[in-house]
Image 1 (cartoon, rainbow, N blue to C red):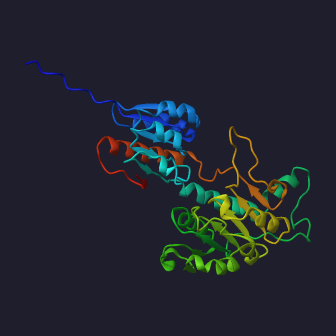
Image 2: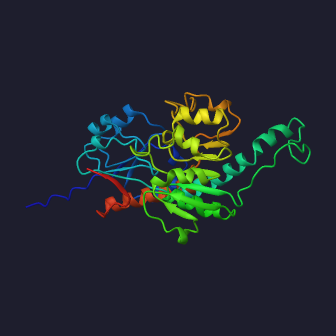
Image 3: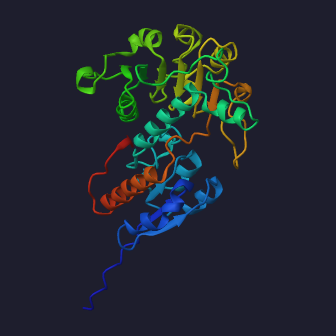
Length: 336
């Protein structure tokens, strides 16, 4: 009787549709299991992905739709290249599939918070703009101009003390700031060098005491609209609000009104109420925040550094190796 040759298993197919990983393509592919086959998509194109997913076991991307789920019956792992997974339709996942996330953005976001807070509180962009016209906008030359405040001795209130919040405080503490926090999980204030730590129910106290309020909470039903008109009214008139979480944690109309009427000192906004549907152009909000002089606006860039995505690419490759070796996936956030 002639022996039949052993069937060669299909190569592990991976579909990647996250443009942030393209600069690290070589590094990510070098960390994958031998024989893995990678299909790269430079942007999210649902039709192209639906056509490519039927034989894929891994999908890497920020968005997963019902149409993709209908096509991806062999899918075992969906990996987002970041912490947020609100773009993944959990109901669309095939049975047995899991969703995993990754972080590595804490240091970059902390650096962003520190640098932009200093820039806004010290009005460095205004001074730069004025000096380009020959105007020395300084109290040294205009004694009636108020002196700006540094971070030394300022009270920084951090709303959410997870990966981002704790790392942000580590950096701001080096400036000589005082720290307070409210968070959903208990925090040892003495161990972290904080003046006090409380629960979310202590948010009004934090807002009253803080010179800088940093939002680091994930978006969910209990945090959407967390900061509204009454919360903004509780802030000090010269306080700065920094949002590196999600735009809709803060009520858009209430925030615009508080800034436009100078009821708070200013805001650093990196996260928004709407994003470009395609390409790289689009208004970040329905209200004209860009016309306000007390706001620093950036396009959701706080965590986007080479170091962030080097770490994320490493985590993604490691989880794909675990899948190939039938080992437990790390950082699972959704299971079907």
